[in-house]
Length: 281
Image (tube, rainbow, N blue to C red; front, side):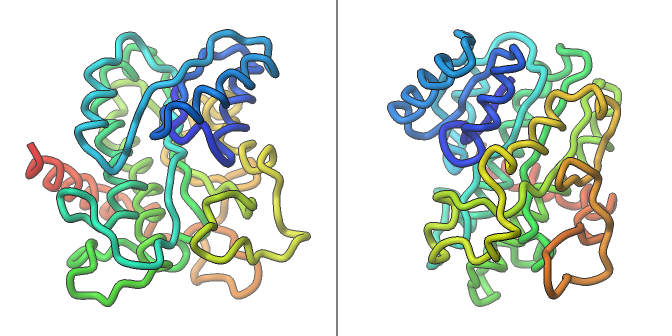
């Protein structure tokens, strides 16, 4: 199994839980030294020597390509966990893409596409995409996803990227059914991690917050539980399928917007992603 961003936040606990269940897990991370330290700790915690580290920078397509080109063998689960949140100023990746969209969605899209053959080899692989309740703040901005005309807003950019993560799962369901690959997205909940370093910290009331272990639980369920081995193209939170809501809740941010599960939107995003990646070749 592969966990992107497996060396920080809920990625650590996702990796540890999968390792404790006996999986061989690759932590895909930007900072190798820090990831190696996390891997060493998880090996001790879980008595599982099968934890390794590979470098991956999702904002750099060369790094994604290197990761893909050097992968051999089947993959039983790919957990697209890594992400950035609410960058205060507009930043762009080398091709000129808005950085949150580039990292949270396009990098994972390129990675998942590149690993399709290895996922198919597993004959029942799962792709898990970590989305967010932040997706309730906005859809994909089809005509201007990179904020060349829309005034940049950190939360709107984050919302778009996380809506795209959910649509990726719908797209995989529709595009790769013949490969035996299932894919689902999830909201891990409110967990205090370094993800909120640009927001001034977690603002969710304490009684609604989760520990990193609790936040990782839904990712682990979707990556490994036999209860969901044929569930496909859905959105989960709190280890159950989330309801579709007609509008953003004003109190507790729960549920998923219809636009994030729409098959037409998923197809449109898939084609957009292919077009953007094609221009970088």
